[in-house]
Amino acid sequence: MINYHQCHKCSNKAVWFYMPSDGNPDKRYLCNTCIKHGCSCWWISDIEYDYKDCIVSKSDSLQLVKFGDGYEYRNLLGEQLPCCEYSYSEKGFEKD
Image (cartoon, rainbow, N blue to C red; front, side, top):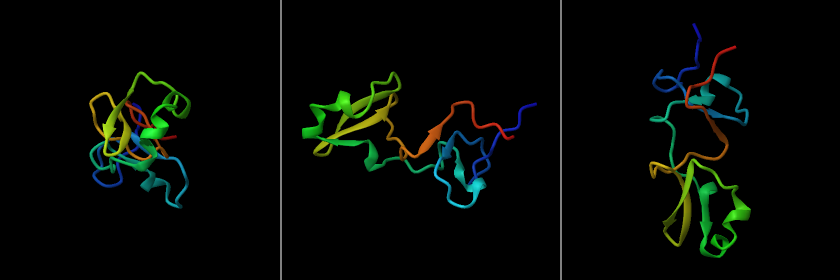
């Protein structure tokens, strides 16, 4: 049986992993419910919009939507994304 990391806030299976080290490896795993959605790292201004293909590589899992005075990348369900410093795995993260 495969053992997966759990969300440190609610114990559900973690699908997000914070890549920079913050000193406590167990607190780097979060589920989709507990993670904070929305981060300025996914925003681009009207000026940058003309160059969007150069800023973020095209992806089958992202869409660009109008947001405030600019645009924002979101997932295909239209949900805001967490900070780009998180890695996502739909199946979760296996424990060593």
